[in-house]
Length: 471
Image (cartoon, rainbow, N blue to C red):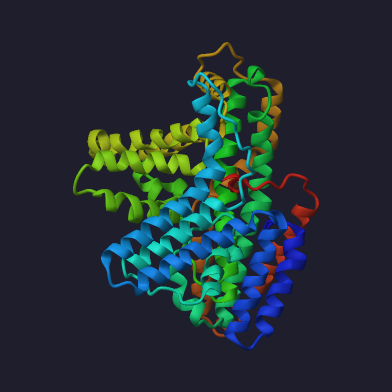
């Protein structure tokens, strides 16, 4: 079940909201939310729900031991066992076949592959469970005495499948005490609908365009077709993932939880360093706080620390060499900005810095998209005129003409332009007589119009994938 499905929009989420807000007791609300989250997960992965339950139970026990133990040795042992077992599940399900397949290439005998199916969301809930245990060990937060409260944190359906990665320290108080005010609920609806628009209106349409070029025969791809395809994917992955994050944040707001923003208009960045401060911020901050800084951060062995973080960042996204290359590609670019041309870059006009950033990011998405190295090589060859290729075909011109308006809207939508316009209008109206009422009516009209638009797009579309389910 995905947020952009009609089943979720018309049945599951309305039913959960009604039951949740009719319940007068917080414990009852937590029970409803926990049950809904388990049903949500089991809908797509019924047999692997036991992995999430077991992971949470192990980390719950580790948290209790760490919280109660007076010996540092016992606390360290509990932390180590928790990290090893929790990451062990991730390694077995996500990476074991990758390691086995690569070892079989060099060993004189074959190691049998497990061919286990990757449990949905395991990369996200593994990191959340780990952050809880580590924060308890660091004494940043008290250990959770109730297993079901910890399970609620790990399994909460708004962020369970694809993030953002929510840290326990950020929601611990809200699990124990929270209220939903009308303005919070209304803001949550708006946030959710903005995310749904990104997914149903933008990501799905440009995604289909990207698939038409990138998922076909690479031999017949033209130079113009290659760039149309990767630019469409450039937009798709942003609208797809940031849209899901916005929907998760909006649902959380409607339920009384305040999740941190996960994207901050990354495509307006003026450097790659700036880009990674804006893209998937919950993942970047996780690796910063739990890997980079413990390794020494900026104090010692900075290059080594950067290398480890970006190797892990790439590998976290998938058990495939293209993701490793993608992570190391960004390590190299960030290293060059920091030690080679970063100061010179800052002196350039903003327009050139922005073009540079967009170009580097687009090249990065080529690494990210193609798991097959041969197809990746052909794509780069066509993009940069190395292969024997045609510049364009009549079909490319027709496709570009038919989609130029869509791509133009995408260019505007990845910037804060519309947000700034709407905020300015609302601020002006608030200063007028009956401005609050007018703003309320406008908000309701906007929400209703967006919901109808998204529903119409989903009903008429057979293309509704979600990219980050695979991670």
